[in-house]
Image (cartoon, rainbow, N blue to C red):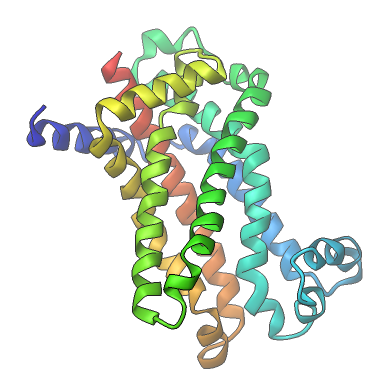
Amino acid sequence: MSFILKLNWLLSAYLAPLKNIFRWKLWGPFFIYGILQLILLLVLKSYVYPFTYMFLSPLVALLGQGREIYFSHYPGLYILLPEIFQWGKLLLGIVAEGLIAGMTAILFLKVYVPSKGKAFQTSEAVSRWPSLLILWGAITIILLLINWVLPSLFSSFLAGSPRRIALFEILLRLFTVFVYGIFIYALPAMIIFRKSIWGALQTSFGFFAKYPIFSFFLALLPYLLSLPVSYSMAEVDTIVEKFTPELVFYILMAGIAIDMLINFLTTGAVVKFLLDQE
């Protein structure tokens, strides 16, 4: 297949959700998910209050190094907030993100191919929530292991070399995107093709094997949207020291909105691609 054709596929996949970006019904599941993330962020920001500290401090203590004490003081709360919020989002995502993506896939199907969409209801995604949870949980664990194991394997090689560390972090992120590209079709395929967990994985593996570069860029474009918030939070100490600690909270709020956009575009693009292939 020519490069131009693959590029046209990629543009077509992402133009489809962009054309429907003002169809507010499509945003419903991701809006609910964004509200849940915002509630989580507000609860963490209120860590020092008695009604939240009582049940959050044991969870924060699991991160070790006395962080539950540091997190309870100003501005330590804002320095640790990105890391702790990321763990909270991770757990929330394992539970809910598969369901949200499944519901949105059905909504996109109804817009892209109304005749086929008549046979689907968003409640079908709810009935398949356990399968979606298992599938998305497995994908999340694989991506986490990559980001835990590889740094440990190369720790001696990276020690004492800022340039190697910087290069390794870039390559690690790109490799994570590449691996995610292997699974990017699985959740939508489970819903719109009514596949089992194994069937959805086979579908995703098959498309990746057939179009590996295309799949990589399909996963890469949304990831690029997340970089401003990711790099800002990597410099949280500088933000707290040179600006104001509260700015961290507002950047994380902006990150929730960006995540909603990323999930919207990714789900819409993958559904469009799968339907075109069908």
